[in-house]
Length: 484
Image (cartoon, rainbow, N blue to C red; front, side, top):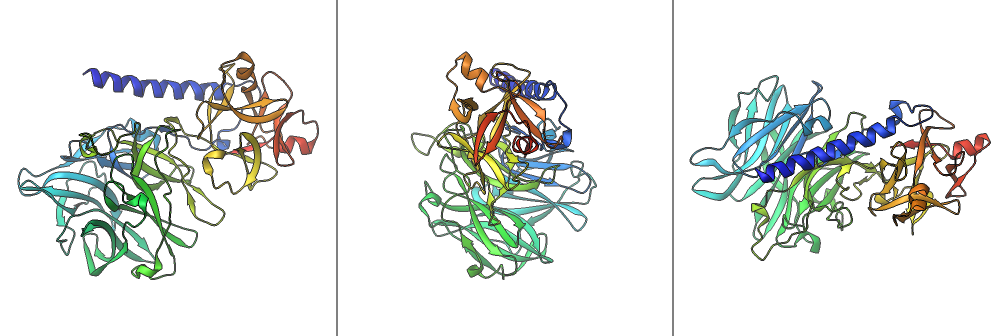
């Protein structure tokens, strides 16, 4: 009960904090910024003690969310009309493990998909008489609302797998449905791909497309698992998770040309470094087992789990018995070369934003050696991400906190803009506080006016950021930013 109260208090604190900040932003002095200027924001974590998350956006206007529960004994489902609404949506149990035999233990990693007018849930399960005989299974429902069921057991993915296998997923490309999953062979957990005949049956011999080879994929265990697919920019991107499920866990990337034969292993290339990994600066460890969805504003979103503390195998610690993986969501950005950029696992609380120049729309505000500048194609994404928080010197104004340097804020010093650590002084608090105004050159965007130097705005000049008056049209354009 004490633990439950602590969790309730923490979630309540997040909700109250988010509400206060958003209220402060919406009640600022000056012309209101139209709602369409703001990107969709999230508050993390989305759900406590929910691992291997999967969110499906359906044509009925709902998001459907399922995940592994720490008891490993059931499949749960919730829905909401917004991604953030899933945090408080009522959760329903749609299926429970068998009392004996197959599908009787280790109910892991459910995914929900809508295929040819029916709902399907893919999940992994062991047997009551052999809990490590993990195999992929499929449920089917014809209900309009999958929370209502009933659900029919289609059994194991067919043809049945003969070794430890899990994390089945499905996708369609060029009119062909595929099934992908992870399976052990020798000491490796590999990723396999096959053409689907129907949602629970595949044809031919599965193709091995990825095995753990890099050092970051072999920490604790040799693992490639949890495939998830995002098709964009003429390519098929398949993310996967690697290493033990402690703080070593990380997200990798496979890429194939959209016009290639996906069942040819040579079509796939593997990125040498992870796309998402533990980050002590943001307090997130072991990010992984992701899925993808699309936010209400049309932006791509990665859904994943992590813990907010650092633990590794050994000294009696077994991550399988640690229930505190939490579901999190954040926006996917795209590099100039068309590849996805996840940045870092963002801190708990409100999701960060980016500020894009109005007059140079391919360039973003970012920090480099703590000096703030304007640059295109910021591949070190977190350098260009800031959290909007209540103003340090005035709660009706705002401050911008660095994502990869928590506790560091955008501030002016000698009329230059820097990202620096809050030293607690009154001068710093004032220098780091701004009034958010409707964009001086475009009212659908925003401008940042200094609180302690009224009439002076954050603006770019010759690639750097300054605090200056902007009396002419060019100056007003340089002081206007789009919020992403």
